[in-house]
Image (tube, rainbow, N blue to C red; front, side):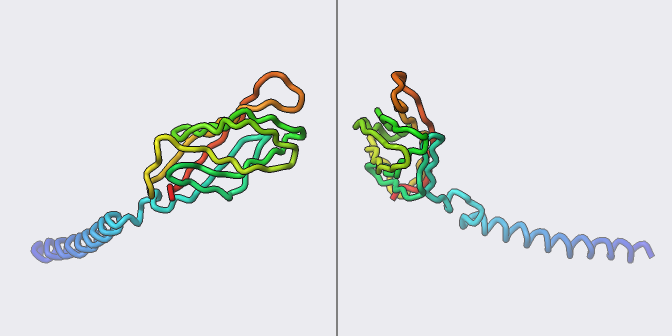
Length: 146
C-alpha cells in the first residue's frame, strides 16, 4: 500500500515539474527575444517646467535635438540659452512673447549614435518681463536617436 502512495506523489510532482519547466523555458525564450525589454519601446518625449511648455513634436537626430518651445508665463521671456545635458547648447538669444512658440534646435557635440537611446536634462536661462536677474527653467528630453 505504501508503494502506491509514493508512486502517486512522484507522478504528481513530475506532472507539475514538467509544467513549471515548460513555463520557465517559455519565459526565457520571450526574454531572450526582447519581449520584456521596455527600452525597445521608447517613445520620444520632451517636457519643460513652467513657465514654458512644449508640444510632442520633436526630433532627436545624430547631430541635433529639435523641439518647439512655448511661453505660457504671462509675459515675454528673453531666452539667453537652451542647454541639453549630453548634447550641447543653443546660445542664440531670442525673445519669446507670451503665448508664442519657437523651434529650438540644439546642436549635439559629440555626435549621437544612430538608433541608440538618449536622455538628457534641459536647462533654459531666461529673463521674464522687465526683470534683471537671470532665471532658470528645467525639463527633460528622452527618446531614440533617428
